[in-house]
Length: 431
Image (tube, rainbow, N blue to C red; front, side, top):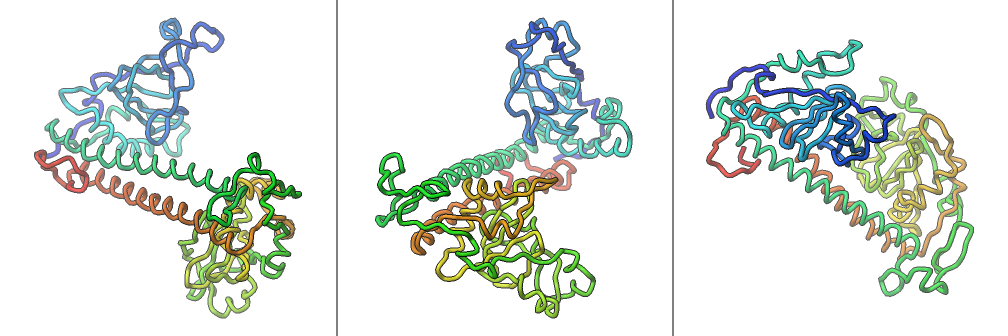
């Protein structure tokens, strides 16, 4: 690759166009065939679903502009920094600037990735001022370094596009399996698993297999009771205030402290950095955590994210985390998954205390009535949900790695730290 040249962003554009909003008081300006977007229509990956369409008369009678396909849409006001490549003619609001790249100086896809990086710097220019957005003059005068050869720009763009596509596929896979898991949980917590290892027929098809209870229809073999009767009140606890765990004498070494934000649906895999000393831990034995305990966040919107603690190292919980210690009669994965299911969340929602963030009272939580089958079925149900959760967790880890790789590649390729060979295959791994 040849050297980089320094140039003002504006020199890479053939033109910039502003947006506007047709009068909402004139119905004939709206409901046409041309999509009209604001900063609110952008996601982290471009434009989401079109919400509004304008007519030709609306375009002629307002300051909006229609950006042609293949050009860039940059949010320079509300939602500053988001951008997309127009895939069809799109009318824009005053939140957006339409950018027409100069094809003799830059590749559109390369400029897109360059702006992803540079817009973060441009956003900083107006921090601490009353200006909400990117000033046009700042945008055009902003200096960047780019490869002079367009074919090199195109190579860099294709490499970054390859990893972007991998990210999109992984995100789609995660979303797909989250829907599958939600459906699986619905079936397992309403129908359970019969002696044949299969889901029981639904209540509508085989009502004789079910019983009506105060908490709804459940399989006849299942029981229901309050959490305090199932686990014992002394086995359902939360810890002291976090401030009682965070004095300087408690940060040396010992037992990790688990906070509300540490609790995510599934299996617990992260340890907080804050620690308490073994001496203090002895005093906090009532709220210690060990392998196979159930943890539940008391605070959230809504609260009740739950996980099973599978770490070998011990820990303690703060006042915003409930720790349940199940006996051998009860499957931790079953109950934790039930708390995370739509049924569990709805039940906990009913006993939540409204506020800035909803909160669950420990006393109310202990009185919560839940359904449960025998231990063999609990384990079978928990295992199926756990398998789905582990698959999703693995894909989420892959997604994090891909995003980290993309960030590194963007820095290396767009700054010229790593040069590209235009004759190599278009794989991000070889960048």
